[in-house]
Amino acid sequence: MIETNELSKMCMEIRIDSIRMTTDAKSGHPSSCMSCAEIIGVLILDVMNFSPQNLSDVDRDRFVLSKGHAAPAYYSALSMKGFFPREELFTLRDIGGRLQGHPDMRKTPGVDFSTGSLGMGLSVANGMALACRLNHSKSNIFVLLGDGELQEGQIWEAAMTSSHHKLSNVVAIVDRNMLQCDGSTEDIKSLEPLKKKFESFGWSVFEVNGHDVGALQRTIREAKSRDDSPSVIIANTVKGKGVKYMEGVCSWHGKPLKDTEYNDAIRECEQ
Amino acid sequence: MKHNVRNFYGNALVELGEEDQEIVVFDADLSNSTKTAMFGERFPDRFFNMGICEQDMISTAAGMASCGKRPFISTFSVFVPGRCFDQIRMCIAYPNLNVKLVSTHGGISVGKDGPSHHANEDLSLMRALPNFNIFLPSDPLSTYNTIKAIHNIDSPCYVRLFRDSVERIYDEDFDLDPFRSHILQEGEDIAIIGYGFTSHNALAAGRLLKESGISAQIIDLQVLRPFDERTILNAAKKCGRIMTVEDHSIFGGMGSAVTDFLSERYPTPVKMLGVDRFTESGRPDDLYEKYGLSIESIVRKAKEIIR
Image (tube, rainbow over all chains, first blue to last red; front, side, top):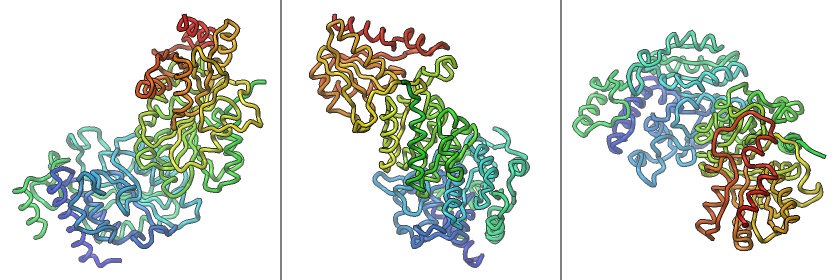
């Protein structure tokens, strides 16, 4: 277990990397990465039994980034973990590169599944969990869901599958930043009461401040230790977290920063 | 004696399940019709009835494949790929995972259930996806050999089965290669290409044409990708006229594939028989007659072309 202060700094690096990468690429979804920098950091750098050395280990953990547009944050964490050199981060979205706009398991070392079309990741995680069960493996399967993508019907098909098969090795984390492309999730198609929805689908539900690294470390460990049901952690987050003028502002979805905005943003994050 | 080809699919699956512990089978509440229930009875731990959730089924199976399992997935051709195309594209085709889709009840063969259940677009959809091989077995041996053979391919495959019971085209002991198209009758006036159920009607039509003095080469396509270029090219060169007969839309189906190929390699007139509209409820034989796929329709069209 990494010491919380040190891990917090690493998560901030993920946030800064995501801003740098998307600015450099002149495309991508910086604010979607900024809301889940801590979640991805705590999972990949701390909680998960997962490294370049143990990829073929049947008991290693797996991760599905169902909200595939947060790929820059994922790539940043994978490079910190040693899956590829840091310099490669700045080839994001370049032709001929290994870092596609959305995760590609065939191109990027460390990526467990290709994503990008929303709503599919929980089903994929269930499939991995069922395979692990057949293999008598002790793996945990983590899946990061965007809150907007919970509007996809497939998510609820999958939520039934997880509980029907009592897939207690599945831990879903919802990046509950309250915003989607066109506005507030509650205005467009409300998700609340989200906790009750998951509970009624047979899940153990946890709630946490998704930017509190220590709380995430504790809660994710508690969730993965449940052995009677799948677990979901509703991580309350702020889209664009870390840069005041981006926080909670919907129009930053899918919009990279301009060079002048970039300098201010990095300065603010580094403070 | 007529046979239900789906039983041969079920038998092949059970045999594969005995040989290979990594095989898992998925269905979406149609396992008695698709015959995956045969596998489910024998290997309940490796059989997953996902309920009426085709999208979840595809992505779950793909997740399993990413961990080294070898899934077979079945439901009706109208639902796979139609109901879950994006999941097939994103979770199977794009990552090129070893998942086998075996759809049953293709085309208008479901008859009375009507157009909501007539699968006339599945091949158009599947042809658009890179990485997928596409197989169209025609009889018991063709079905059995295809299922056994695709198990040895480490890439996605789509297999389309049909509802009607059929006579054997190939003798049980014939050494049938499922990766080739097969000439069922030699001829030189016209080449008629069928697949699945329509190969039977094409063959019967070919025999009738022979009685009228027309020499038709009859081809059972069996496999759409990898496309058996040599057999089709030779047929075009020998006959100079092609007619395709398919229980599917003419927009993007087998006829289109043949035309795509020949227009580049050896431009040849091609008449495509198939549907071009939403169909209707009815007995399969009546539907085949009305929509131009019956033995008599094929004979009539061939005579028109040759005159």
